[in-house]
Amino acid sequence: MSKILTDHGFLFTTNQDSADIYIVNTCTVRAHAENRALAYTAGLKGWKQKDKRVLAVVGCLAKDKADDIMKALDFVDLILGPDSYRRIGEYVSQIINTGTKIIETRMNDEIYCGIYPTASKVSGFVSITRGCSNYCSYCIVPYVRGQVRSRPADDIYAEIKHLVGKGVKDITLLGQNVNEYNHESVDFAELLEKAADTEGLFRLRFLTSHPKDFDRRIVHIIKDRPNICEWFHLPLQSGNNRVLDLMNRKYTKEDYRALINYIRHDIRDVAITTDIIVGFPTETTEEFEETLSLVKEIRFDNAYMYRYSARHHTEASLFKSLDENTIKRRLSELIQIQSTITKEKTEQMKGKKYEILIEGPARGCASRGKTRGNKDVVVEEKIVPGTVMNVIIQDVRGLTPIADSVT
Ligand code: SAM
Ligand code: SF4
Image (cartoon, rainbow, N blue to C red; front, side, top):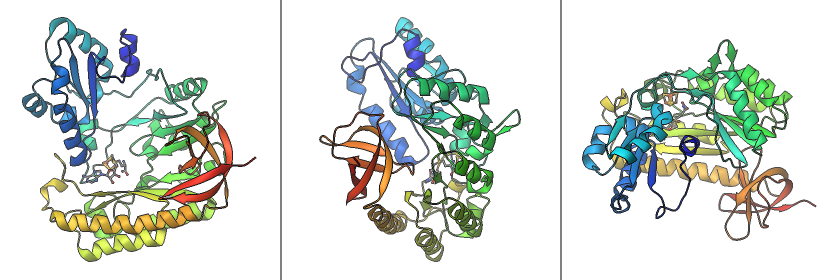
């Protein structure tokens, strides 16, 4: 969007007092994200009172709740669904000139072709697919993003080349399920290999791998390509087979365990992270405990843990939810167990050497870098972003390793 607006002659600012256009980009995957976006937009009423300012709410929440937003927050000028972002410059100009309000939330075959970001950091994301057709029973994504479609491989390679040319060193290929990538008979394995061949590309990663479609060739490609990082994000969601089935995940806990064993057998020092939902409707105490025991057994490097949130349109929203206190209690129990594991694994990094890519400043005069396993590391020196350095982990603060550079 910022590239399109810049092409329309607008300038980018993060200073809201000097801004004429305010864009609130939204997510609706959980109720929490939705409520935050709505509260944030409501807080912009004062900003909007100044003449000729344009307030836009864009993204998945805008697609799902356009009418509700217009009713509750009638000072919003523009509502744009995720498939309409290409028209943002045109619509903003129209609103400035005519003062009309615009709502545009139609779904189409948008796949991000030909738009490459103007400004980039040291690390960047490149979308390879859009939408999702898996219909996990709790998930709103297929309804707000549409069916899965793959972006042409040549356009992906061109964006990677463009980013590398701008100094980006660490690129993550992004899709709801990267293993479903398929465009004119190029599959994800081929895409990954060719992307890794980009001249000057220092690090390559991908997110998210759905366990049901995991292609074991990927493990061998990673072993052969030094610039592909040894990190897999494999959302587990639940450690109980009945719940997994009810979630429509299409794998069992035995399949999941076998996959992790396969990866760990073949790649030394691999980092594995996950997503888990607790309190899915009808989840019993014993079933939740199965998730806890799988988490203890697998020992993820890190996990994003969520309490179940009923979402509009989804099959699971028709099921009776568990009571909120039970869900909260389960979530804090899971977080406590995983945090202990993350802490222990971080402590094990002490005294070891890691290659990190400095991404930016940390608090004070320290810098923050990333390992190949996607772990943030703090170095107590001011270092230029983009620097690659070898460090030795000296200490752990909270869950963050603190390192010294190796001379
Ligand atoms: N496509 C990825 C996959 O299938 O693993 C996940 C993408 S989703 C946008 C990110 C995470 O949000 C999911 O892995 C899930 O843990 C969580 N999530 C999605 N819908 C949720 C819901 N209704 N309640 C709680 N967490 C949810
Ligand atoms: Fe949602 Fe991921 Fe399932 Fe697609 S695969 S429906 S994005 S959780």
